[in-house]
Amino acid sequence: MTSKTARPSRGSRVAPIRLGINIDHIATLRNARGGRLPDPLRAAKLAVEAGADNITAHLREDRRHIRDDDIARLTAARLAPLNLEMAVTQEMLAIALSVRPHACCLVPERRQELTTEGGLDVAGQVGTLAPFIAELRRAGIQVSLFIDPELEQIEASRAVDADAIELHTGTYCAAAQTGDGPALRRELNRLVAGAEAAATAGLEVHAGHGLNYDNVVAVASIPEIVELNIGHYLVGEALFVGLAKSVARMRALMDGAREDLRHSDTEAKVGST
Image (cartoon, rainbow, N blue to C red):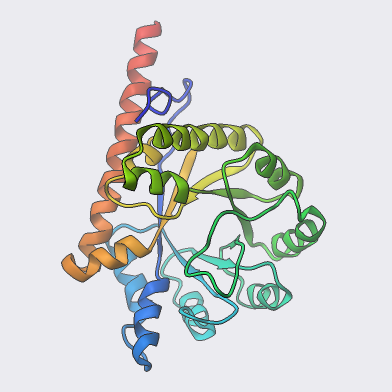
Protein backbone atom coordinates (compact mmCIF):
# COMPACT_ATOMS: atom_id res chain seq x y z
CA MET A 1 0.00 0.00 0.00
CA THR A 2 1.34 3.43 -0.84
CA SER A 3 1.48 6.21 1.72
CA LYS A 4 -1.13 8.05 -0.35
CA THR A 5 -3.64 5.25 0.15
CA ALA A 6 -2.93 5.03 3.88
CA ARG A 7 -3.60 8.72 4.42
CA PRO A 8 -6.09 9.85 7.06
CA SER A 9 -9.54 10.73 5.76
CA ARG A 10 -9.04 14.49 5.86
CA GLY A 11 -10.57 14.88 9.30
CA SER A 12 -13.94 13.40 8.41
CA ARG A 13 -15.50 10.34 10.02
CA VAL A 14 -14.49 7.16 8.20
CA ALA A 15 -17.65 5.56 6.84
CA PRO A 16 -18.30 1.83 7.24
CA ILE A 17 -17.73 -0.25 4.13
CA ARG A 18 -20.39 -2.54 2.71
CA LEU A 19 -19.77 -5.98 1.23
CA GLY A 20 -21.82 -7.05 -1.77
CA ILE A 21 -21.63 -10.71 -2.76
CA ASN A 22 -22.08 -11.60 -6.42
CA ILE A 23 -23.80 -14.97 -6.72
CA ASP A 24 -23.53 -15.33 -10.50
CA HIS A 25 -21.20 -18.31 -10.39
CA ILE A 26 -23.44 -20.32 -8.11
CA ALA A 27 -25.85 -20.11 -11.03
CA THR A 28 -23.03 -20.97 -13.46
CA LEU A 29 -22.45 -24.24 -11.59
CA ARG A 30 -26.17 -25.00 -11.54
CA ASN A 31 -26.55 -24.34 -15.24
CA ALA A 32 -23.64 -26.63 -16.11
CA ARG A 33 -25.77 -29.61 -15.04
CA GLY A 34 -29.26 -28.21 -15.41
CA GLY A 35 -31.97 -28.46 -12.79
CA ARG A 36 -32.31 -26.29 -9.70
CA LEU A 37 -29.16 -26.95 -7.64
CA PRO A 38 -27.05 -25.38 -6.32
CA ASP A 39 -29.64 -22.72 -5.62
CA PRO A 40 -28.47 -19.08 -5.91
CA LEU A 41 -31.15 -18.04 -3.41
CA ARG A 42 -29.69 -20.35 -0.77
CA ALA A 43 -26.23 -18.92 -1.51
CA ALA A 44 -27.58 -15.41 -1.02
CA LYS A 45 -29.08 -16.37 2.32
CA LEU A 46 -25.80 -17.90 3.54
CA ALA A 47 -23.84 -14.88 2.36
CA VAL A 48 -26.08 -12.46 4.26
CA GLU A 49 -25.86 -14.58 7.40
CA ALA A 50 -22.05 -14.52 7.09
CA GLY A 51 -21.85 -10.72 6.86
CA ALA A 52 -22.79 -9.61 3.34
CA ASP A 53 -24.68 -6.31 3.20
CA ASN A 54 -26.21 -6.78 -0.23
CA ILE A 55 -26.47 -9.31 -3.04
CA THR A 56 -25.33 -8.66 -6.59
CA ALA A 57 -26.56 -10.62 -9.62
CA HIS A 58 -25.86 -9.96 -13.30
CA LEU A 59 -28.75 -10.80 -15.60
CA ARG A 60 -27.00 -11.16 -18.94
CA GLU A 61 -28.65 -11.03 -22.33
CA ASP A 62 -27.76 -14.70 -22.95
CA ARG A 63 -28.78 -15.79 -19.40
CA ARG A 64 -25.52 -17.71 -19.08
CA HIS A 65 -25.77 -17.78 -15.27
CA ILE A 66 -28.45 -15.77 -13.45
CA ARG A 67 -31.93 -16.22 -14.92
CA ASP A 68 -35.12 -14.20 -14.74
CA ASP A 69 -36.58 -16.54 -12.14
CA ASP A 70 -33.53 -16.04 -9.93
CA ILE A 71 -34.07 -12.28 -9.96
CA ALA A 72 -37.77 -12.71 -9.19
CA ARG A 73 -37.04 -15.01 -6.25
CA LEU A 74 -34.24 -12.82 -4.88
CA THR A 75 -36.51 -9.78 -5.04
CA ALA A 76 -39.39 -11.60 -3.34
CA ALA A 77 -37.16 -13.05 -0.59
CA ARG A 78 -35.93 -9.60 0.52
CA LEU A 79 -32.86 -11.10 2.18
CA ALA A 80 -30.82 -7.94 1.58
CA PRO A 81 -30.75 -5.07 -0.90
CA LEU A 82 -30.44 -6.47 -4.43
CA ASN A 83 -27.96 -4.90 -6.83
CA LEU A 84 -28.96 -5.88 -10.37
CA GLU A 85 -26.07 -5.68 -12.83
CA MET A 86 -27.33 -5.17 -16.36
CA ALA A 87 -26.55 -3.89 -19.81
CA VAL A 88 -28.03 -0.68 -21.17
CA THR A 89 -30.83 -2.27 -23.23
CA GLN A 90 -34.57 -1.79 -23.39
CA GLU A 91 -35.11 -5.42 -22.37
CA MET A 92 -33.13 -4.95 -19.17
CA LEU A 93 -34.77 -1.62 -18.46
CA ALA A 94 -38.20 -3.25 -18.64
CA ILE A 95 -37.11 -6.04 -16.29
CA ALA A 96 -35.62 -3.61 -13.79
CA LEU A 97 -38.76 -1.45 -13.79
CA SER A 98 -40.84 -4.58 -13.23
CA VAL A 99 -38.89 -6.14 -10.32
CA ARG A 100 -37.62 -2.84 -8.85
CA PRO A 101 -34.39 -3.94 -7.19
CA HIS A 102 -32.75 -1.67 -4.64
CA ALA A 103 -30.07 -0.71 -7.16
CA CYS A 104 -28.96 -1.28 -10.74
CA CYS A 105 -25.34 -1.23 -11.85
CA LEU A 106 -25.02 -0.53 -15.56
CA VAL A 107 -22.17 -2.47 -17.16
CA PRO A 108 -20.80 -3.02 -20.66
CA GLU A 109 -21.67 -6.42 -22.06
CA ARG A 110 -20.41 -8.47 -25.00
CA ARG A 111 -21.64 -11.99 -25.77
CA GLN A 112 -18.15 -13.41 -26.38
CA GLU A 113 -16.55 -12.17 -23.16
CA LEU A 114 -15.98 -14.55 -20.26
CA THR A 115 -16.48 -11.77 -17.74
CA THR A 116 -16.97 -8.00 -17.87
CA GLU A 117 -13.92 -6.52 -19.57
CA GLY A 118 -13.27 -2.90 -18.61
CA GLY A 119 -15.64 -0.15 -17.65
CA LEU A 120 -18.64 1.40 -19.33
CA ASP A 121 -17.87 4.25 -21.75
CA VAL A 122 -20.14 6.78 -20.10
CA ALA A 123 -18.51 9.75 -21.81
CA GLY A 124 -19.34 8.28 -25.22
CA GLN A 125 -22.98 7.47 -24.34
CA VAL A 126 -24.23 10.50 -22.43
CA GLY A 127 -27.22 10.95 -24.73
CA THR A 128 -28.27 7.33 -24.29
CA LEU A 129 -27.52 6.97 -20.61
CA ALA A 130 -29.14 10.14 -19.26
CA PRO A 131 -32.77 9.19 -20.11
CA PHE A 132 -32.13 5.52 -19.28
CA ILE A 133 -30.89 6.44 -15.80
CA ALA A 134 -33.70 8.94 -15.34
CA GLU A 135 -36.30 6.18 -15.85
CA LEU A 136 -34.65 3.95 -13.27
CA ARG A 137 -34.38 6.74 -10.74
CA ARG A 138 -38.00 7.75 -11.22
CA ALA A 139 -38.89 4.20 -10.20
CA GLY A 140 -36.93 4.64 -6.96
CA ILE A 141 -33.98 2.54 -8.12
CA GLN A 142 -30.48 3.72 -7.26
CA VAL A 143 -28.15 3.69 -10.26
CA SER A 144 -24.42 3.04 -10.33
CA LEU A 145 -22.11 2.89 -13.34
CA PHE A 146 -19.25 0.41 -13.64
CA ILE A 147 -16.36 2.53 -14.95
CA ASP A 148 -12.60 2.65 -15.19
CA PRO A 149 -10.97 5.14 -12.77
CA GLU A 150 -10.69 7.91 -15.36
CA LEU A 151 -11.62 11.54 -14.72
CA GLU A 152 -13.51 11.81 -18.03
CA GLN A 153 -15.74 8.87 -17.10
CA ILE A 154 -16.31 10.17 -13.58
CA GLU A 155 -17.32 13.61 -14.86
CA ALA A 156 -19.66 12.00 -17.39
CA SER A 157 -21.19 9.83 -14.64
CA ARG A 158 -22.07 12.98 -12.76
CA ALA A 159 -23.42 14.59 -15.91
CA VAL A 160 -25.88 11.71 -16.53
CA ASP A 161 -27.09 11.98 -12.93
CA ALA A 162 -25.98 8.58 -11.63
CA ASP A 163 -26.15 8.02 -7.88
CA ALA A 164 -22.86 6.12 -7.69
CA ILE A 165 -19.95 4.71 -9.64
CA GLU A 166 -18.28 1.33 -9.23
CA LEU A 167 -14.58 1.57 -9.97
CA HIS A 168 -13.25 -1.30 -12.07
CA THR A 169 -10.44 -2.86 -10.01
CA GLY A 170 -9.50 -5.52 -12.56
CA THR A 171 -6.32 -3.84 -13.82
CA TYR A 172 -5.12 -3.24 -10.26
CA CYS A 173 -5.82 -6.89 -9.37
CA ALA A 174 -3.95 -8.11 -12.46
CA ALA A 175 -0.91 -6.06 -11.44
CA ALA A 176 -1.09 -7.48 -7.92
CA GLN A 177 -1.20 -11.02 -9.31
CA THR A 178 1.86 -10.56 -11.53
CA GLY A 179 3.84 -8.81 -8.80
CA ASP A 180 4.59 -5.83 -11.04
CA GLY A 181 5.38 -3.24 -8.36
CA PRO A 182 5.36 -0.09 -10.53
CA ALA A 183 2.13 -1.14 -12.25
CA LEU A 184 0.55 -1.99 -8.91
CA ARG A 185 1.39 1.43 -7.45
CA ARG A 186 0.18 3.17 -10.59
CA GLU A 187 -3.16 1.34 -10.63
CA LEU A 188 -3.71 1.80 -6.91
CA ASN A 189 -3.04 5.52 -7.24
CA ARG A 190 -5.54 5.65 -10.12
CA LEU A 191 -8.16 4.10 -7.84
CA VAL A 192 -7.34 6.57 -5.06
CA ALA A 193 -7.55 9.56 -7.41
CA GLY A 194 -10.73 8.26 -9.01
CA ALA A 195 -12.40 7.70 -5.65
CA GLU A 196 -11.47 11.19 -4.49
CA ALA A 197 -12.74 12.80 -7.69
CA ALA A 198 -16.02 10.89 -7.60
CA ALA A 199 -16.68 11.70 -3.96
CA THR A 200 -15.93 15.37 -4.62
CA ALA A 201 -18.44 15.26 -7.49
CA GLY A 202 -21.10 13.98 -5.10
CA LEU A 203 -21.11 10.38 -6.31
CA GLU A 204 -21.12 7.42 -3.93
CA VAL A 205 -18.06 5.28 -4.62
CA HIS A 206 -18.07 1.49 -4.96
CA ALA A 207 -15.40 -0.84 -6.37
CA GLY A 208 -15.06 -4.37 -7.62
CA HIS A 209 -13.73 -6.98 -10.06
CA GLY A 210 -10.98 -9.47 -9.29
CA LEU A 211 -10.70 -8.69 -5.58
CA ASN A 212 -9.43 -11.42 -3.27
CA TYR A 213 -7.98 -11.87 0.21
CA ASP A 214 -4.51 -10.77 -0.90
CA ASN A 215 -5.40 -7.54 -2.68
CA VAL A 216 -8.56 -6.27 -0.96
CA VAL A 217 -7.04 -4.44 2.01
CA ALA A 218 -5.48 -1.64 -0.02
CA VAL A 219 -8.79 -0.97 -1.77
CA ALA A 220 -10.83 -1.19 1.44
CA SER A 221 -8.42 1.37 2.91
CA ILE A 222 -9.48 4.08 0.44
CA PRO A 223 -11.86 6.10 2.64
CA GLU A 224 -14.12 7.33 -0.17
CA ILE A 225 -15.02 3.76 -1.18
CA VAL A 226 -18.09 2.63 0.75
CA GLU A 227 -18.93 -0.65 -1.00
CA LEU A 228 -17.03 -3.57 -2.52
CA ASN A 229 -18.71 -6.12 -4.79
CA ILE A 230 -16.96 -9.49 -4.90
CA GLY A 231 -18.07 -12.78 -6.39
CA HIS A 232 -15.97 -15.22 -8.38
CA TYR A 233 -13.11 -15.51 -5.90
CA LEU A 234 -15.36 -16.10 -2.90
CA VAL A 235 -17.45 -18.69 -4.72
CA GLY A 236 -14.24 -20.49 -5.69
CA GLU A 237 -12.89 -20.32 -2.14
CA ALA A 238 -16.21 -21.70 -0.91
CA LEU A 239 -15.42 -25.00 -2.63
CA PHE A 240 -12.69 -25.52 -0.03
CA VAL A 241 -13.99 -23.86 3.13
CA GLY A 242 -17.72 -23.28 2.57
CA LEU A 243 -19.45 -20.08 1.52
CA ALA A 244 -20.07 -18.80 5.06
CA LYS A 245 -16.37 -18.99 5.99
CA SER A 246 -15.33 -17.55 2.64
CA VAL A 247 -17.58 -14.51 3.06
CA ALA A 248 -16.79 -14.08 6.77
CA ARG A 249 -13.05 -13.90 6.12
CA MET A 250 -13.50 -11.23 3.45
CA ARG A 251 -15.78 -9.31 5.82
CA ALA A 252 -13.07 -9.44 8.50
CA LEU A 253 -10.33 -8.23 6.14
CA MET A 254 -12.43 -5.30 4.97
CA ASP A 255 -13.48 -4.33 8.49
CA GLY A 256 -9.88 -4.59 9.69
CA ALA A 257 -8.72 -2.25 6.94
CA ARG A 258 -11.43 0.22 7.86
CA GLU A 259 -10.55 0.05 11.56
CA ASP A 260 -6.90 0.77 10.76
CA LEU A 261 -8.06 3.76 8.74
CA ARG A 262 -10.12 5.03 11.68
CA HIS A 263 -7.10 4.73 13.98
CA SER A 264 -4.91 6.64 11.53
CA ASP A 265 -7.58 9.35 11.36
CA THR A 266 -7.79 9.58 15.16
CA GLU A 267 -4.00 9.77 15.49
CA ALA A 268 -3.87 12.54 12.88
CA LYS A 269 -6.49 14.55 14.81
CA VAL A 270 -4.65 14.09 18.10
CA GLY A 271 -1.35 15.06 16.51
CA SER A 272 -2.84 18.26 15.10
CA THR A 273 -4.17 19.51 18.45
